[in-house]
Length: 195
Image (cartoon, rainbow, N blue to C red; front, side):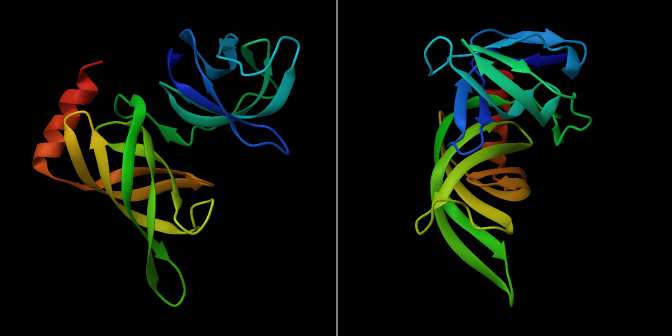
């Protein structure tokens, strides 16, 4: 079963435009990704406006990219259904906006260098997170980030974590926890289970 939960944020990338963050208004489900019904979203455009692009689809099955059309507050998957899922869900994710600052470690020639960054975590789970961040000197994250040390403002207080990069695109970085304090790990498990 594939479920796109209400309140989650999907990213639509249209040619020649900034990525558009769309909030899902009602949960949709289907047995397979290709069978998902149209997804109702909060549409920033007026009636009759159509947009086509690549949708970063975050569902209970994981994250994948599909062609989609946005029209009158409805996202419809178009084209061939995807055959892969970039990251499967091994743990329940909690969406939100949690302020984060930290240092990214880059794998560059001739060695590794560090870059300060800030932004926010868009979702967390007991196994990893999705970070939207920018370094102080650029509009996008530098390529080849291998590890990030983050200080994240969570509802129970500050959480410090070392993240190993799983996927990186423009200003988004998805990663798994390499290190968490035992108290943060316990608080995170309680927080993610309280859905």
